[in-house]
Image 1 (cartoon, rainbow over the protein chains, first blue to last red):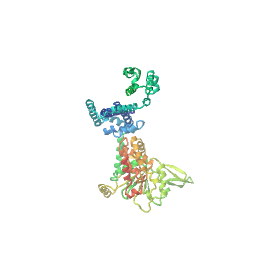
Image 2: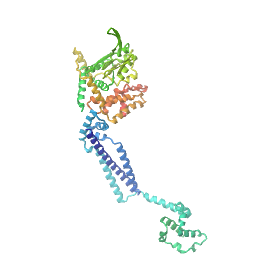
Image 3: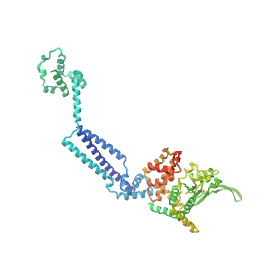
Image 4: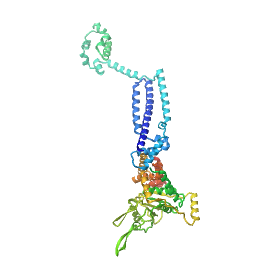
Length: 241
Length: 313
């Protein structure tokens, strides 16, 4: 009897856990679709929506599984009201004739419990409906390319402004501000040579500089420097011109 | 396996048998049975003429147990309750022999307990709590089961001594007897004015059966969440300072759970329900809560406070 009861109780808990995980997955999916819609409308990084939804799912599952209760099943099966909880709480009591009689009553009752007792049909329907609506909305946003604001472009523009501002000043400080060490650049022979040219620019007439310097194409620079360095150098040269 | 349903039938038979004498006091009979199943004591309170003494006497008659009655008066001495040592002549020698008092019974009816002096009332304390009596330097164990079922009159009168808090706490339940319903009162008049002999009752439960039932009572399981709610309820009586001067002690928590278990058994259930707790909360807590002046000013009773606290937990 005790083993039978323990098995039945394990089954009840296991089914309940599965249902909790499934419902939490639906909730997390709703949460993800809402965030996805928002990130789409604002052209923000979509990965943020996914990461937040995963965090929400883990948190919900942990919270619900630690507060697992048999009240929901009792509510849907009044013949188990209070007795299921009592029997579950006294599962470790042996040699108690009243508890044994209670277990028998619970076992008989559990046989009549339907799987639907574990699922809140109204909640499930609601979640599925919300999921459908949100999924449709996301598709519409994607197809029509709806956008309220381009946050990504805004962030990138902010970067450009800073770069221009930095380039407006002295090259050494600009490079330092941008995290590029001048010493490192100077280790490069070609750049060192170029810097030497710049050092003498005040003493030289700019028109007298060899035409080749200004004709240095992107292709040549590509081979010598990283993209970051290249942009600074090109802009600087353009400015000098 | 215990057939709880059969136990319910037994208790119904007891109530029915008591009902031959007592009209419409099923609730009071149930409360007395609860106290007895919990191996506790009960204090019955009502205005005169509502059948407190008769109810207890009838319940005792239905049980096949030794019954004694102590009619409390201001001149009652503790030795009148516990017993005393008297000189007896045995084989030509005079020796002191202990003569047991009325407390040496299974069911003791302490009638109008608040008429006895505090000294005499306290003589009952040891018997009620420890189930033993000390006379001189000797301690005598009382035969189980042992219950004190006391009655008192709430109307303030001269020559009464209100029970001290320590003593009221030793009563598991304080049962209030209210006026009977109109049709019940008509039945009482009819029953006791037309027949010369009162109806006879059968003895249903013996000493050993009752001890077995007391053991079953302890075995009735209770869900953890109900247990926690009980403790919360009792704790709230200590925390609620708006109307309560002194709240209930942990003994009240024990009493509530035990009384609820007994009620479940009487109802033929194999578990304690929250309904049981709600039903016994009044009798268990009402004499363990002391209201403050604010509550008295507003005309509130302990039962009102208990109902309010029950809604909060």
